[in-house]
Image (cartoon, rainbow, N blue to C red; front, side, top):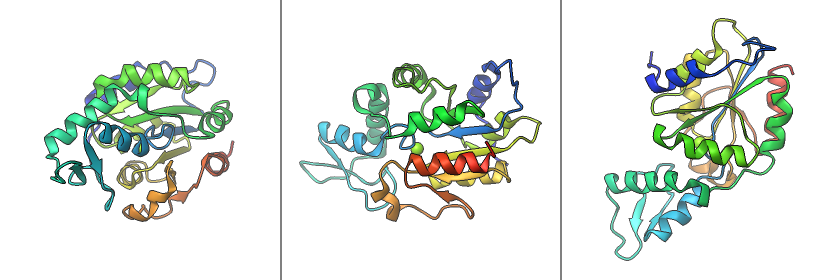
Length: 223
Ligand SMILES: [Mg+2]
């Protein structure tokens, strides 16, 4: 069993539960990049501004970034640094995914909504400020480890219904292992990337946009 990122655990313990419902409501956990905020599109443009291009022949960052001028592959350490720079400046580059704020607002009246983003912890405040500004003021957790253990801890002991939305198959797989009865949804802001994706865990529901995702989540959580 994979372990829970200790910093994510600290963040979960610091969440103040809604007094009216405590932790009895169904739980909806949402990824941020390419679920609530466009990610790959803005990242591509950010790389180009920095003289690099991302050739998405496979669905991975490392090994797919090349210098525009020379065509030489960019080494992993520099890709990490570029990605870090992107997260630092995310507010200037990222935009909300169409329909997300409205769909989530509808669900949030009846379920506990928590955002779980795989991003270096040090960028949490930047993302928090940005999400607040665009009407996504739900609790935000960062993790640098697997997502499944964080979702299991968020659920608590009550056995309440859990839904999880992510664009990365490995995150959905991690949720499936840690919370075996979770309702998994795959949503990716840019559907043209779907053919590049590795296989999704069995019984993952595919949502092509937030209208489909909202309906599917409401039905899975019996809202
Ligand atoms: Mg994502």
